[in-house]
Length: 314
Image (cartoon, rainbow, N blue to C red; front, side, top):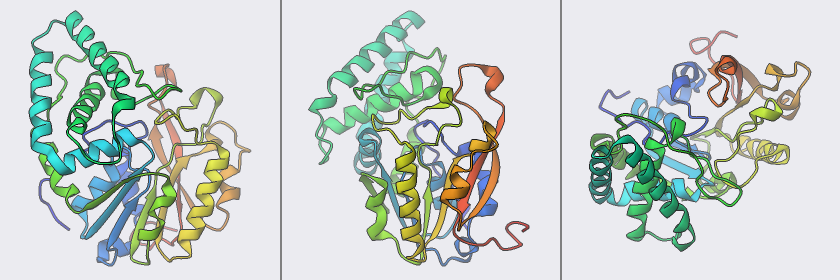
């Protein structure tokens, strides 16, 4: 294990696992600590909290991150390729933002948001170019200054989170961005469906799936990371892919909601993953407009391996 300074997520992402790392740790396979896991693969990387934790804590030589969201992958690739120019743009955005009074900050936020949305169809997401720098800077700016720091889009794919009233948001975190860029030098970054990772998976791989969660109620349906909907058909397609990778002898972990928080008779995951180990951890419900409904709820961890007594009783 290493103890060097390490990067934190540069974007806040709905469903981020930063607050759950301590609970997740005992469920990691023993092979991770033993050094026999050579590849860490995350098909729904989001903010990357688990990816960054494993990169900092364990001796893994190769990292592969994927996401269906092209804006997110563009940002990671920009940080990987040209972090210093990105820092310069972010620093200018931050200085200008801090020079404004609150009402002017609000106007500036909506100006940036409008520009971000209008230019969406002009961006070439396939190959790196200088437009990516402004795109990534705007994404980070909006993420740090919008309400609740979330990335959410409407059915048209437009970023639609309103202004957030933060006094001193850290728009340009130079040190963290440089640390992240250093780690990304040894990371394969790709936009696409979760199945795109298959060709990189072998028996020395750990794959962590953190898909859009199955909603535990009609009002808890928050899937707007991209215009695509991750319904029960998609959940079962993911189950089939999980089974396929299991046959490759990779170590697999999958997070999802526990339907029994709302309906004790809902056995969706117990049925879908009947041949695998299912554990429960507790998480704070953070995406709810009513503070009275933000208490602790159960989440599921689905594993394709047994846990040693040193990791977990049972």
